[in-house]
Image (cartoon, rainbow, N blue to C red; front, side, top):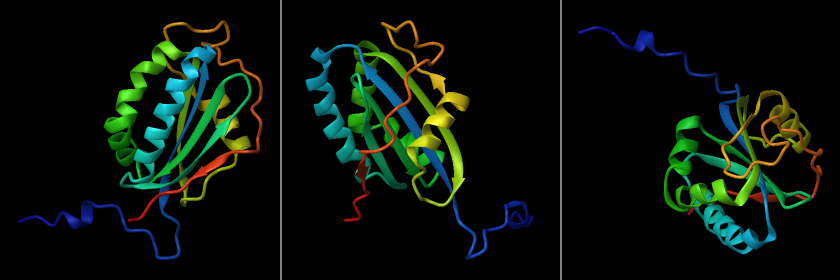
Length: 162
């Protein structure tokens, strides 16, 4: 029998922050007519995320011109993907193809579960992010040319620990 424990990475020291996976999305609704259904799906996905295994915290930023940013921090990418591919979030995602004329996403790994600020989220979106598929893209969509977001007024999305 071989010793596989030597193949595992060393556990972080007790005082060393754990690495966390950060996900940021930017969505712009192409018309006000999609807003009621979008808001309903937002309520449902918010409830789902607060109970998701591995969710450390997040925030929602209602920006200008029907644009919304989300920021979530996860124990790891696998936890985020389990949330993304189940429940209310899975049901909402295909609708965004029709509802949005701009959509983008960026992910990164950071030390510790603290939420980055919105300036960091925007910087990462512009430098490392990618445009998501939409059926009715704006002229600025592919190049991700958009106005700087407001950097305050976000709503926290705290995890529920029942």
